[in-house]
Image (cartoon, rainbow, N blue to C red; front, side, top):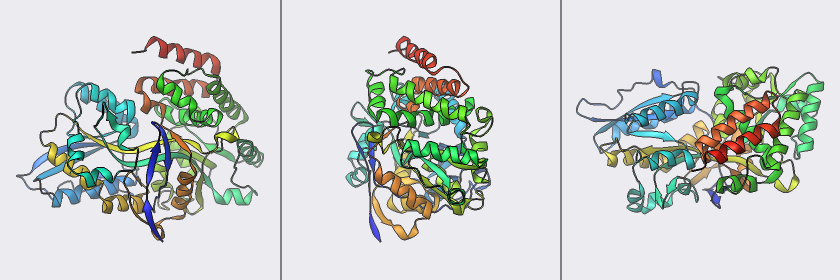
Length: 440
């Protein structure tokens, strides 16, 4: 069956989605890819920096798009990509932006992250290019371009969307008579049962380098306590980081830590190590984004791939069911260092055409930010479950460090402190004071 694939936002930050994702292709390495594909000595070179590493299967798909564009583009240019790991990307890009040595095209996050560079006159306004090509402009899912619109103009081009889900091992659940939880109390009971069986319930990382992973979990709990109200209020400046709903979410998380829901010593476990625990069947669940589908759906890197499925984290309060963490997954912007903006925009148009969006969806599990006809027969079982998660969502709240890079990073660090046992009220009081002291 074929149907139109549409993802859309309701309100400034709430995402209501109809989405799809597909089977994962083989793992690719940028280092082993022939960067000379399609090159000739007389071609102009445009540099491009992307978020990803050899362990990310979708890198192969990205490289294929770039290689094909290099062979066929009418601009006489060659795109030279550099893939930088997620843990290093922000630091490297910030340093390059500050020294005016940024690449021509960059991967970017939306909202406050990109806004910092827009305000610093580091990013090209793309509104005229969208206005000149209405078909391209109208191909984007409703609400996606808005996340990269500042003072009425678009500065970034979204290529994928995402949400946080709880991956789980179906075999472990079946062997222990467990059903997918639909309430938070049921989720806690599942974790308790797994503990009684000597099984680690959830793989989670909480090191300084992967602080966003534990903050993502606390944010999801806060969505379950307060819905998207808390996020919206904090975004607008009327809410407080030490709101009782956030404190309750942090306290619930700390209770889970104390009960042993996460792997032993999880505060010293990296993101890749936590994923490996789940991939090797040493943990029953793993909380992360839908971008992980391309890794978890691949038997070459995931030993339990055939048993992986997912569900949306149940809400603490029933009325907040289907409010989850999520937003855009992948976006690109053109920097003011670029001397051939037409060619850079040409790449972004090519990247987001229906053929490439479909390939990234079916082969690498990248949920598109554009509309096209969905062929359900090409979807893997895991991706079909992810579609259901998207379809059921009432709202998605973007990660706090996308809303505001500085305050979001402080929230990430505060979450690590809470994971390590610091008193939630005190930590969140300090975070609120930091926010007030650093108001613009």
